Amino acid sequence: MMQKQKICKSYEWLLKNISPTPSIALILGSGLGDFIDPTNVKQVFNYQDIPEFPVSTAPGHAGKLFHINLHGKNILVFSGRFHLYEGYSPFEVVYGVRVAGLMGVKTLILTNAAGALNPLFKAGELMLITDHINFSGENPLIGENWDDFGPRFPDMSQVYSQTLQELAEKVALDISLPLYKGIYIQIKGPSLETPAETRVFRLLGADAIGMSTVLEAIAAKHMGMNIVGISCLTNKNLPDCMSPTSEEEILNMARKTNKKLKLFLDNFIQNL
Ligand code: HPA
Image (cartoon, rainbow, N blue to C red; front, side, top):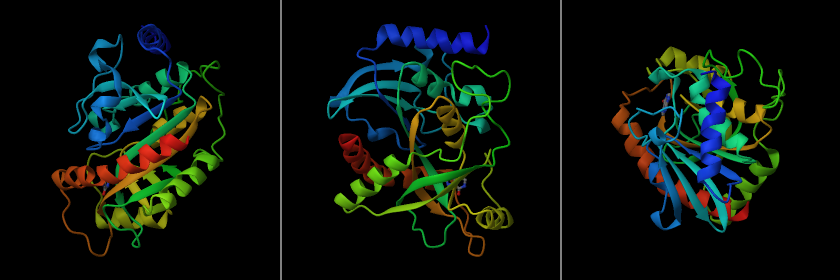
């Protein structure tokens, strides 16, 4: 089956099975899965039960699509994302974004676990993504352009909505939650950075680094969605004082940061 036909098949199935159709989508990062409060869940689908939908394998990623109602808003929550380092193609990485876009989702909230490159940032805090650097070596738009999805050469002068950034800052201030702002760089992974690489990424202007988000933001921008991105800073990643970082440490810190993310998202969504 052609790629576009696959997406359309998933979309048509979800359209039949989810009502009312959500206007907001949220993609949860590694170890950030317990955002979901069972009392808000209206429906839940295993990825494997959605026709043509890819199935995720990464630790901390459940592979479930939730339809939740929060503050009167219908939200699609992707718990389980597809990473390049797992061997997924860029097409599979942005699959959920594409389906959400077809369903008419206008606002996309991207979250991730990231390493802090900015020496002023503390681990355990949140960072609002103001811009990104695609250092993944991939692009989800390579190949035939689907003109009904978006333009061949989509503008990237403002990927992350200015209005949503202002709202995020206002919400953080209201609830007295520290919220850094900065540039996120996506690498392919799965190996973490050497000190020399960390130095390069900092020199390139990045404040946080991770293995997701950018390709999804590109596909969402292609479809004209309003995007907001939040990084949970799980570890400091500084070239001159690097200590070994383990996956366990990153996932543990992500779980700790989860509380802050949940508080932030709850208030942010309420104000959307
Ligand atoms: N580097 C890359 N990806 C990451 C990191 C990091 O330090 N922390 C969490 N995801």
